[in-house]
Image (cartoon, rainbow, N blue to C red; front, side, top):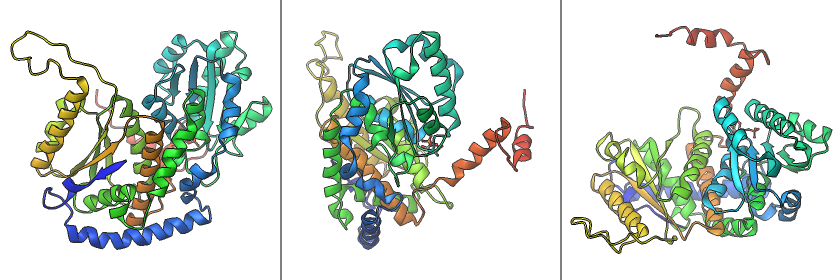
Length: 430
Ligand SMILES: O=P(O)(O)OC[C@H]1O[C@H](O)[C@H](O)[C@@H](O)[C@@H]1O
C-alpha cells in the first residue's frame, strides 16, 4: 500500500501542511509510536488490536464455519463494529456464498430480506461484542422466527460471535450453539481482523491467512516516523489538516467493491477520535459516481475538507466497444478501467488545482492480501491519530446517551434525561 501526501502540503493546498510543521509533527509521531508499542507489549485495551494478526486462531475460525460449508447464503446479524468490517471484506471480494448484513432494524428492509433469502440454505452468524445490543438481538429474534416458520432448525444453522457475558452468550449456552469469542482488549470497531470479521470471510471461502499476511505486512511497515510508515503518514496528515481547518475528510474510493470500506472507515475514525470537542468528520463518497454529484462542493465550496482518493492499481477490465458515432470515437478501444483511472487522476488534479488538500492511497489490487493491509493500516492510522489528538481512541461514551434513551423510551431501563427526549419531540411542523 502506498500513501502519497504530496497534495496535502502547503505549497499545493489551502489549508495545507507546511513542510516544517510536518517535521515537527514527526517528533510527536515517534513518541506516539513508542506509546503504542508499549501498549501492544502489555496487550493493553485497544492497543491489543494491532496484535491481532499474530494472535488470531485461524483453525478455530475454520472449524466454526465448517459445519456450514453447504450454505448458499450468509446472514450476519450485528451492527457497527459487529457488521462493517465483515461487510467490507464481503463487498470487496467475490464469493459463491451471498452475504447479507442485517444491521439496521428498518422493518420493511428486514422483511424484504427474509422474503428473498432461502433460509434453509443460510448460515446465520449473530455477532455482538457486548451481547446486549437491542438492534442485533431484535433482528436475531425476527430471523429465528422466520426460520422456524420456514421449518428450518435454526439451532443447526446458527453460530454466535460474542464476548464472555451478555444475552447472546446466555443464548448460545442455552441452545448449545457453536460460538466464537470476541478477543479481549479489541474494541468492536477495531475487530475486523479477528473472529468478528474473519469468520464471515472464511465462510465465504476467502483466504483468511492471506488477509492476515497483508495485515502483517502493514504491521511490519509501522515505524517511528511518518516519513517511513504509510499508515502513520495517513493518520498524522489527517490530524494535521484538521488542525489547519480541514475538519472534513471525504473518503473517495474509485472501486464499487470498496464502497463499504468507506463505511467501515467512518465508524472506525469517528467513534475513535470524535470526543472532547475534537475530531475530523469522515464523509463517504464513491468515485467516479460522486464526481457527478458532490464534487462541485468539494472543489468550489468552503476549504474545510480534505479528500482521500483510494484505488487499486490493477483490476479486471472491460473494453469499451468501438462506435462510429461522431464525438465518441475517443472512447472506442479504451477500457472502463482506463476511463475510471483517467477520471481519478483528473479529479485529483482538479482538486489540487483548486487548492484542496488530497491524499492518495493505492493498493495493488482488491484481493485478500491488499484488503488485510489496508484495514490494518487504517486501524494503526486511527490509533496514532488518537495519540495526536490526545483522546482515548478506544471508548465511545457519547454513543451511550442515545442507547440509554432508546431503552428508556421502550421501558427497558431507567433514563434520567427522559424529559429531555420528550421536550425535543415537541416542535412538530405539519
Ligand atoms: O458488538 P456490539 O456490542 O453489539 O456493539 C455494536 C456497536 O454498538 C455501539 O453502538 C458502539 O458504539 C459500536 O462501537 C459497536 O460496534
